Length: 613
Image (tube, rainbow, N blue to C red):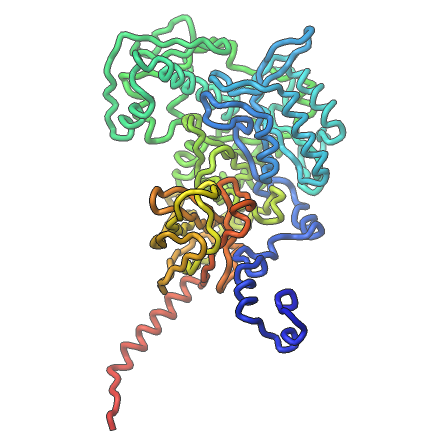
C-alpha cells in the first residue's frame, strides 16, 4: 500500500485511487508467479544442501551449435548465452584437431557433419570468464563427449587444470559413494565423461547414439549434397514415411562419405554385404516411431560401416582422475541399481518414450528407484537434425535430473523449460518434488487432482513480432496450454491441453477480451505440470511473446502475467508487456462433489413461483 499510495492520508485510510490500483494490477507485486519462490541466498543454501541427485538441473544439448545439427555454425558465444539463461549443464563434443609445434589442439564440433569447428581451449576460457563474473553460482557440469586420442585427452586435462585452477572439482574417494550437494559444489566445475582409465571401455548409450546419429546425419547430408541423383529430398522422405509410403524409387547410385575414419553408405544393396567389416546398424533403436518405417525399409538401408577396433574407447588416466560422473550403458535395472552412485545413464528421448515410459508401471518404478540415488541424462534423438526439442515433463516426472535441450531452438518445449527454472532466482537447480521419488513402500507417489480455471481478461503494451517497432498494428490472440503427465498401469504419458482466445483486431496496446467463460484444465501431477501462455498475431500466427509458470508456483485471483520474448528476455519492447488474467484452482474431487450437490439441490427444490399480489 505504502509503495502505491500518493500521500499519507491514503495510507491511513487504507485504500488506493483507481489509477494506482491499475498500476498495482500490472506491477510485480501482483505477479501470477509466486514471489516466495524467489528465495534469498540464505534460503537457497537450506534448499540446496541435499545430494545432487535430488535436483532438476537446467541442461543443454550440443551447446556449441547455433542452428541445425548438420551444417550450422559452432560458437563459443553460445556457451555464454545459455549460461546467462540459467543453464548449468553444458555439452562439449571434443575431437582431435591439428597440432601447433607438436602440441595437440582439441576442437569442438559435431563430428561427421558440416558444422564448423571451434577450439576446446576457447570454450573453457569462456566458461571460466562466466565463473569469474559469477563466483558463487551453483556448480557447472561439463558433459564431455570425448572422441579424442590419448595425447589430445592429456592436453584437454592440462587446459582445464590451467584455466579453471581451483574451480575444477577433483573427486575424492568418498565422493564415489556419497555424491556432494549443489551447495558444497558452489563455484565449481564438475566433469561427466568416462571414469575408468587406461583400459578399453564398452560404449555407453550416448556414445552409441552419437555414432548412430553421425551415420544418419552424414547420410542426410549426402542426400542434400547430391539432390539431383539422390533418393529424394529430406522433406519428401519424411513425408513418405509419415504417410506410410516407404516405396522409394530405385536408382543405381551409391553415396559414400568418408569421415573420421568411418564410411557411411546409402544404397540398395542387401544388408551384410560387406564381408570384410562389421556392420553396426543402430539407427532403428534410436529412431522416432514415425521414422522407423523409413529407416528400416527394404528399399533404403542406412548402415554405419565401421572397423571392429573402434568399438572401444580408451580413457587417459589424467582425464579420468578429474572426472566425477562415469557414463555407463544400461543393461538391466538389477545391474543399474547395484552400480556405484557416481555411475550414470544417458538415454535419448525416443528411447524414453518408447521403452522407459510405455512398458508398464513396474518399469517406471525401477527407473524412479535408479534416479533416487544416481544421475541420469536425457537428450534429443539423433534424428532431430533440425534441432527440435522434446517434451521434458516425462523425464522430470520420473526423476531424471538432466533433461538436455537445444537452447538454440526457441520452441514450445524450450519455453516450458524456461518456466521450470524460473524458481530459485534462476540458479539452475530445482529440488525434485516428492512425486518424482518412489514412496517408502515402493509405490509411485501421486498428487491430488486439481481443477485449474483461467480467464484471459486483457493485455498491455504487447509488442510486434520479434519486438520490431514498425509495421501494421497487430491483432493478438492468446493460447493457454497446460503440459502435464499421467502415470498409470500402462506407463507414463504426456498430457497437453490448449485453449485459445479470439483475436482482438488492430490493438496491441491494450486489448480487452470481453468474455466471461473460463478455460478449464484437469491437472494430474500438480508438482510437475507447467502453465504456458503464448501470444500470437492473427494475420500470420507469428509468435509475439510468452510466459511459462509451474502450476506449483501460481497465485490465485486477478493476476498479472509478465511476458517474455522467444529467448526468455524481458527487455526493450518486452519490458512492460503483460496479460491480466483471473486464476482459480480447486481440489477436483471436492469440486465435483460440490457441483453434484448443487445440481441435486436444484432438482429437489422444484419450480419457483412469483406472487403477483
